[in-house]
Image (cartoon, rainbow, N blue to C red; front, top):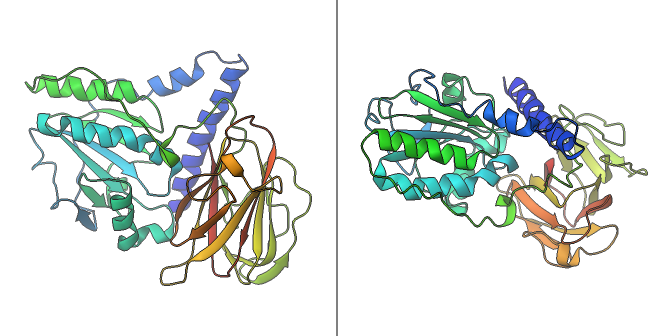
Length: 359
């Protein structure tokens, strides 16, 4: 099931990126706005589905649709490495805080994309590190996901005090519209609401993408979903790789790696991953398996330390440490965005690399 879910999610994100690119060229006018509005119409979409499929709950005892009657309920589907969800988090967090005493209950349904996101210790770490303080339904078996017939990270569903879903939105954006729906449903229930919209100050991975310069797509490194790998992968067996000359959005490996279905695993020290990209941000989902030692790494851009273009997980010389499996922000360009070559060198073996995302 997860393969079909990922393909659906990737088609959705790809369509959004294509629409943004076409809009820049004046081809489709307000197509991006139209895409968002397709999910903005307030409507009656049926009863709030069961949350009983959650394998456990964090920050709360188990919640039920029946027990939530009288509350406006926002259910936010997330998985902690998803860059698209991370960019929405400042808003969801702010709504949960502002409207909690006015009758809003925010529930984060954590449905994993990668196997390590099923690890409850990882989810607990992510919730604490990312200040996700509202109730979390841990949906490791996809039961809540299926109950909502959901296909996307992130996805927001809002139900009224009678337990009827009145609104949904898939993907990033539509923050003002979503908050206005929250305000309207709270007002319908008799609450007096401050109609000012929340102000957020995102940092690091939570900063919205620069779609005006973004030319590089999400790229998986495991052979099941890998695209634009510049070499022939030997599946599930060690092999020494070298990086050939890369074109835009191609990537390569150097050193001894085992390319598995969901990730590439470094077998010997001083292995590299190289990607030819065009974006403001380079993010990388990676890390050592649970119980393994941290892995030191160094990032270069066009063969040089990133300097002021370093991301929040490295210093200006490009040095960082991968201590757990998560999304690392490695590059944030400060000046001209152009085709560049990203390189990450790992000083120790054992790291697993899963996916590039860009912003």
